[in-house]
Length: 219
Image (cartoon, rainbow, N blue to C red; front, side, top):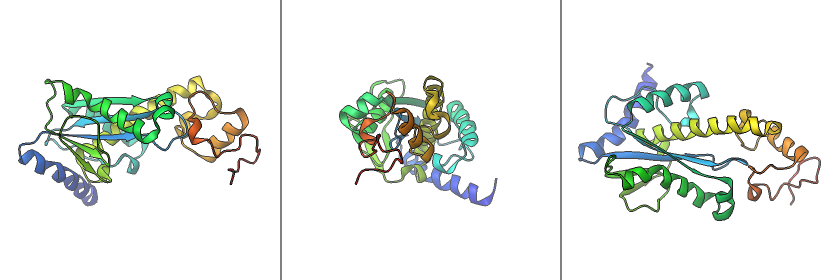
C-alpha cells in the first residue's frame, strides 16, 4: 500500500474512531444516483467496526468500477450491518429528488432505527438530516471524511450500477450499462432519438426540447 493510500485510510478511520472511543457505535449513510436522468436513487447504510480497517475504502467517485466491486465484497464480509434503500422514479417525480434521496437513505437505515439486532447510537449522514428518531450527524462531503460514509458510498454506487446494468437489458436502446443513467452526450442523443422511457425522470428532462433534433435546451 502506498504512503498516500495509507494516509487516506488512516484519516478516514481516525474520523470514525473518535466516536467509538467515546462509546458510540456509528454507521454511515450515503446515496447514489441523485444527478442521473434515469433510474432510482439508491442509498446504503453501513456499520463498519473500528477494526479491521479495509485498505482502499474511499469516496466511491475516486475509485474505478472494478475497485468498487472488490471493496463492496470486502465491506459485506466485514460490516456488522449493510442496509440498502431505494426511491424509484415515481417517488422521485412525486416528492422531488432531494426528498426522494432522504427517503432512500432513511429506508437504508431503517433496520438500525427499529431493530435491536443492529443497535446503533449514531448515524453519520452525508450532507443531510433524515426523518428518523435516532441521533445523527450531517457531514458535508462525508464520503471523503468518514470511513463508514465512504463504505456506504461504495455500497450504494455498486448496488445502483448493478440495477442500471439490469435495466439496460430491459431498455437496450439507451446504453444504461455504460452511463448508468447519467446525462452523457450519448444518453441525451438516445433520448432525443427514441424519446424518454418509463424509467426516465421527466422533471430532469423538462428543459430538453424533444422536438429539437440538435438536442439544445430551451432558453
